[in-house]
Amino acid sequence: MRPPKAFPEGTAAHLELLLKNARRADERTRIQAVLMRAAFSLTPVQIATATGLSVNSVRILHSRFLREGDACLIGRPGRGGRRHALLSLEAQQDFLARYQDDAAKGLVLSAPQIKHDYERLLGQSVSLASIYRMMERIGWRKITPRPYHPKKKPGSEQDFKKSMRKSLTRKTGAKGARR
Image: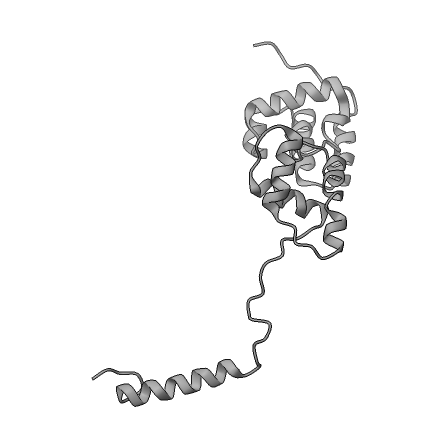
């Protein structure tokens, strides 16, 4: 196995300064992995054990640091995001803008109808859940039926429960127990 390349002079001091200013945990871990080699000449196996990274990740990180410098340690974007989107956010907003006038008039918009139009636009089928997620991203929400009848009288439910309990007591004898 060939010997590892040496880091430039002053790397350890520079990395200690970066470590103090690091904001995220993943940045700190990457800086520590390089700092351990620069300051203490630890092997990738020892560094991997100390940081929780894999040995291969430590080796890749060291080689990238030698090639790219601080850019591989600080400010790297995360792994999340919408990589497999069928339409961009702007295109989705434009698509749903067609329904904005109907929604403003109070007309009922159904997700299956929007799904049908969306599939026609794309030329492929999509799930209904993706339509609901798209509507949520734009700021629309799913309207569900009310959990009560709009003409319900306040207190009528309690009155019904009381009268029902009395009628059950009369029929069965004592507090709902059957004879």
